[in-house]
Length: 289
Image 1 (cartoon, rainbow, N blue to C red):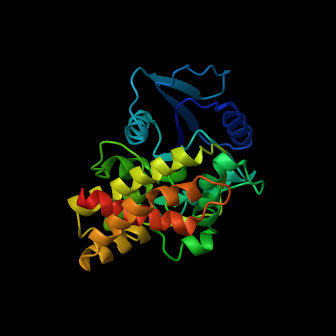
Image 2: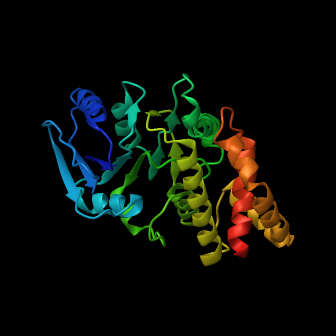
């Protein structure tokens, strides 16, 4: 009935598998768990789990292609994608998704949650961004269902996922692109309060690079399909700036204030507002260069 698909790169997934097997043992459903090690430097060594297989790539496919590979390998009609660095928040995690498959929706997003303990300085940008932008109740997410799209915890029909036309080679920012595709194709999306804790926080400098990559993905979306439907706030702001012919000023702002902004964003108290300013200015800079 459900294929649980976990792309893995250089992360210990044992705790997640332990928890999933505990929750699945209380269900009377048909399931499989497929883990794809995407060419980690040190191949993982996992203990034996029921209905679970570990596959390995010799060369790194990247996030998108790894998920497409897993979807093709899946045997069941519902795909539950989980990132390797998460853990279910609630004991009814599996039950909630099983019940969801009995409704008329095509995609279900469970959401992300974060523990209340603030991490050490070098990891705070990712933490505060997650707390501010990702930890959102389903009630709020459902008012604009294509906006808060988090692909680290979602359930989707197999044929639908494989039919979506991801015009991306790879890179960061899949969630933004995914949300636009779902809206463009009028896919029935439902958000649930079925969160996972996001555990794998990266260093602020690394995360800032990923946000730059995500901005490039948004630019690719805009350039290749400027009329596509979407609910991404950053892309909307960029389009407004571009229409007002202000990209030169924003590009200049990025060059002048980049170092000062980075100092804040990688510091003790990173500002998510300044992060959004940085991302918009970066988009303008890349658009002109």
